[in-house]
Image 1: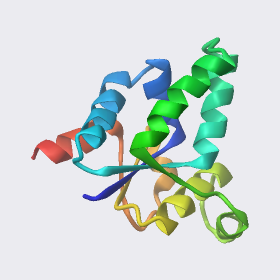
Image 2: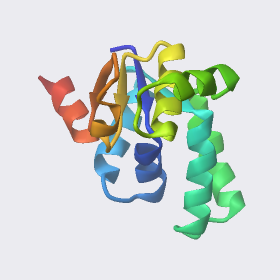
Image 3: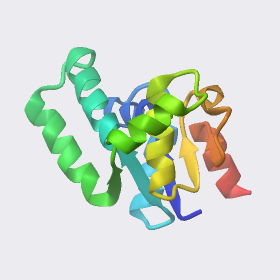
Image 4: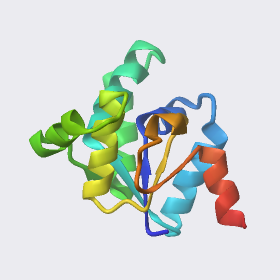
Length: 139
């Protein structure tokens, strides 16, 4: 597996040390060690910054510092008018998930890691929950 796309919920788990933090942290560490390349959409950074500020009381300076380090080890994928057009035309039940999916596809993702795998039931690439992804890698 060469390119792994992180959905927004996993990115927030990592930055906020919430819910599936251990799995998210292990995935990020593996990417840092060169096992695969992480892809994260520009939309995820916008959403994560809002959640980190509004719900986890992080300051803008703290958020910028976290993101500045993180973007050094991932590829930021675009969400532009072409991605939005694809999301509009898609059969995804959730528009935000559709934008994430088509952003991942455009950049050649081999898999998507999300805590809501059911939301990607129409995906043409592998979709894993964080721990399931790690379990798959160890087999």
